[in-house]
Image (cartoon, rainbow, N blue to C red; front, top):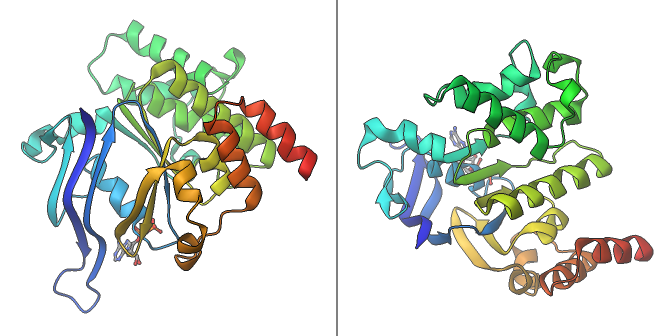
Length: 274
Ligand code: ADP
């Protein structure tokens, strides 16, 4: 069964004002439990507005979002539970760190879920491991860490809530190429171990090629394409008309990976060609 489904999902900003704008326009899609979905589309295509409706941060103007077959707004009082099940990592999430220590920061989410202290700490430590934060960093102030480390603390804070669906909005933005590679492989590893559902919003076709089973292409508020990575990348001309370009190397990478070659093979080839 689908974990997330949308039916004619529509979101309009500023209804009835001169600034009225339909940002998400009758989107119908179905995401299966355990899938890794890449979300692409040029700026303003509706990606953020779409994903913010998946965990109830925005309430649809019309249409529905179903989680496990149930309209998430059927009981508005239970929207908090939806937010625990659908975890969201925003762009530049490190700006939201505020606790005295890294461990406390990662524990913040789970500590609001009514869990026992021992369970909270276990989740926080496990989440820190997933994102590769060394044990000795956990008692430091998050503000003493490097930019890449802060980013990982913020992501661990969402992972620690053990969401069924993890949504990441541009998680590698602003990181150097090495930091980007490391973070992406940690996300892929997390997905392989937990088998939860991941939505990765990214401008980077390479990031998407390396990770996604299927790609959702947003264009003018519509779901313009939603298909296997290889099949979407094969529609280069249509993508270009939407202001998106898939570099040749990215297509090769995607093909190799989806055909079962290990990531390392594709990366070695990529480096050799560069
Ligand atoms: P993306 O994430 O793909 O860049 P957004 O969902 O942020 O796209 O934006 C989709 C459209 O909605 C754009 O035209 C944008 O200008 C408009 N929009 C986004 N947020 C707001 C807002 N708070 N008020 C009015 N219009 C908005």
